[in-house]
Length: 155
Ligand code: MAN
Ligand code: CA
View (cartoon, helix red, strand yellow):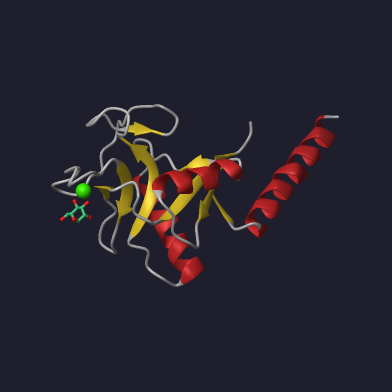
């Protein structure tokens, strides 16, 4: 019986992986990531993720590696370097209090030196990476950028 259950579990995991990959999702350490091919404002980007049963990516502590993997796969997929990519971070509710889309407070900081500077009106987080470093900037939420959705694998 245990063996049969293991086989079923293994097949369903493989199937989930296969189906998601077909739809443009990238699998990394238990989660799926979707990198957009077009640009939208921060809230339209988030809406897109929600419609895909996901949300904008949350980068928690010690997951610097996630950023690298995401950016690498973005490059592989598009053969284009994407300079600014929306992440699930904003301080729209209260200026200076940065929150992830799940409501959690920012506990790891990869801000680029001098950021966040709220230049003009900047309440939304972008990954502003180059080949040397992955770092974040606060940008105007109405800017149109690529975005990354994250979907947790159901447990
Ligand atoms: C631009 C924008 C800002 C950023 C500065 C840094 O003006 O991307 O968000 O803070 O550059 O020089
Ligand atoms: Ca800024």
